[in-house]
Image (cartoon, rainbow, N blue to C red; front, side, top):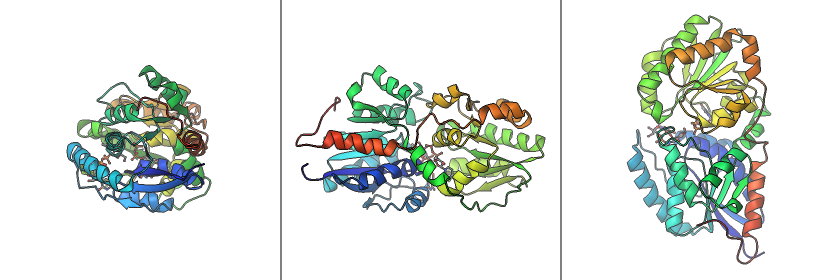
Amino acid sequence: MNEKKHLLCIVGTRPEGIKMAPVIKALKQASWARVTVLATAQHRDLLDQVLSLFDIRPDMDLNIMKDNQSLSELTSRLLTRLDEAFAELRPDIVLAQGDTTTVMTAALAAFYRRIPFGHVEAGLRTHDMANPFPEEMNRLVAGHLARWHFVPTQRSRANLLREGIDERAIHVTGNTVIDALLEIAEKEWPLDVPLDDARRLVLVTAHRRENFGAPLREICKAILRLVDHHEDIEVLYPVHPNPNVRAVVAELLSGHSRIHLVDPLEYAPFVEAQKRAHLILTDSGGVQEEAPALGKPVLVMRVETERPEAVEEGVVRLVGTDEDEIFTQASRLLSDAQAHAAMARGVSPYGDGHAASRIADILERDLAGADGVVVGSV
Ligand code: UD1
Ligand code: UDP
């Protein structure tokens, strides 16, 4: 083998930190690779929490986040700063995960500098540009610029094949979130929230841009109704720091003794909260992947999902953002033990915990030798 290949791993937000951590760890153990980590810090505090948990110290930090950042200013700042970073670091390949603005701009900046790009968690699609917004566009752009597509499932592989992506560039690895989850979930972590063990826990998260405004208000009203109708539940809601989320949640849900509004939980306590939950209501992507693996029923408060596998397994249900529908579906699971048990089966359609080592093996195979194996259109 020739000299080590320089792999630049990019992380911007909390979920990217969680899902790239196993990849960074696997690549750091590879003798053929020199790994550097660049944090865009599209998220500041949420990303730092995760990097510290997984003991990742970025080699470069762009410190991009601004309060209530708009998509256009975030995109333009990221593109400029990533281009400068690539010029300075001169990586052989760039790797990024998912569908955030960080990932889309990393793929584009790499393309402009003709640096091959590897996309982790490739091939997720709703085929609806408005849902999720802007993530569906981000993944289309990143997907069409990637030389390596590390897809979680056969379904995501099929999505890419339909778009004309070279099948030799698509690798079904599973989702690295399950690698991270299994590592964390095997231990018990302190959950610093005064929960009442006698009550059933309903865990809630919501942060999607397309849910800002009226849909988020509907979600909050449904939660209030649930708490009023079911005396034996309490709600734990770690509230995303986005001001568009905070303001509405504080206005509608503050002051209820059985609704715990808390700051975002660090990843390990959040996994613990998922383990303790009876039911999870969310619009998160990652939680849709993790909760089924932990055997927890999930109601997804969105109109579309790019993760249909768990829905087809019957362990996740798409309920939209209408107050009545969320209330009715959640009430059923809180009242009907059989309906709940049918969704609490512990299946993991998104991975087996070995995705990151597969990614490292594929990259080693393709980058070994003088020329490396070059497939795909870019
Ligand atoms: C971003 C991603 C979304 C992903 C989510 C994960 C885009 C367009 N959106 O959405 O795909 O699902 O992250 O959580 O890439 N903030 C803080 N501290 C933090 C993080 C955020 O204060 O650590 C606040 C800031 O005011 C920031 C705002 O939240 O401007 C929005 O952050 P941003 O990354 O633009 O959007 P998210 O809604 O977090
Ligand atoms: N998560 C966390 N603390 C919280 C809420 C979520 O650590 O308070 C984790 C969750 O387990 C999952 C990830 O954050 O792994 C999902 O991030 P988010 O919902 O912000 O983004 P998405 O997955 O929707 O892009």
